[in-house]
Amino acid sequence: MKDLIARINKLSRKKREQGLTPQEEKEQQELRAKYLKNIRHQIVDALESAGYKPKKKQEQTCSCGHCSPRTEKRDEVPCPGKNIH
Picture (spheres, helix red, strand yellow):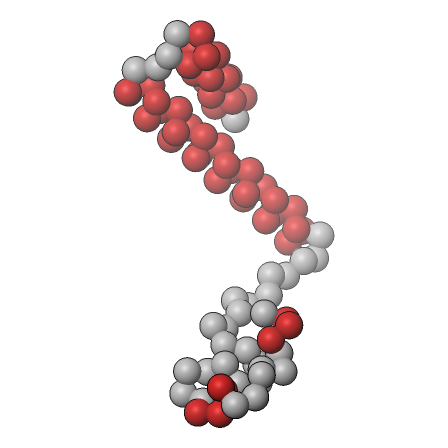
């Protein structure tokens, strides 16, 4: 990880001072993506070890079913769950 950060910093300094070649720009983007992926993984691990369990992904519709595309009455009455979307 230290080597990754050192290379990212080196490319960043070079970019400010003299610019990067297209190959170096691509490398910089890949290294940054790898770094961010690693950080996200560490955060998820820390949350899970603290007992946090992620919720299920939310549905595209509200839980009342009012916003469902198949509901005919949805235009007649405002959705009661509209403020929680």
